[in-house]
Length: 191
Image 1 (spheres, rainbow, N blue to C red):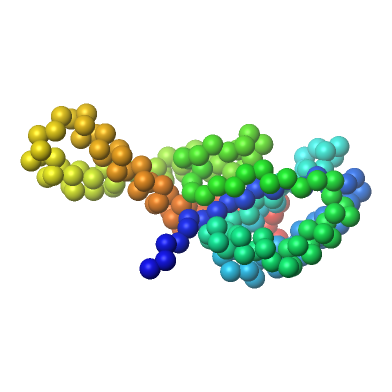
Image 2 (spheres, rainbow, N blue to C red):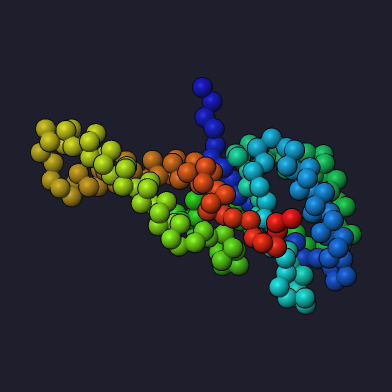
């Protein structure tokens, strides 16, 4: 049985040469269309520059697994497209790569406002995930601990040590299932 990796989010920053915004946008549309055909592609969010003096586009790409991302990154098509982009970009940076739900991890300051779901959504997901786990842990470990006469703080510590890996496994899957609700497409991106 193969162990599948959790979903992966990769964030890129593209600094575009002045006057080449349309070139970049056409290039990114072609790249997105091709990526959408690639196994494991989930979605992409493009954030256009707000400052016309600094033409930095931020691209956030979600993949089903790290293996899917790596296969895409090693594709001949992507290499060709990156070479093509050199005509109209000043630089490309890989800002961040992470898996799982952002409520549990820290993101770069530039991307935080874009990547974080609304606070109430984070709270709902945390409650819906954590509360059942607490009851499940109690049902499983309660009878075990009852026979061991462990002090309360030790029982809590053991439950936390068991829950932390469970949350790390569950949150990426919950994020994937609820992705459209957590990260609705910005109005500017809908067409």
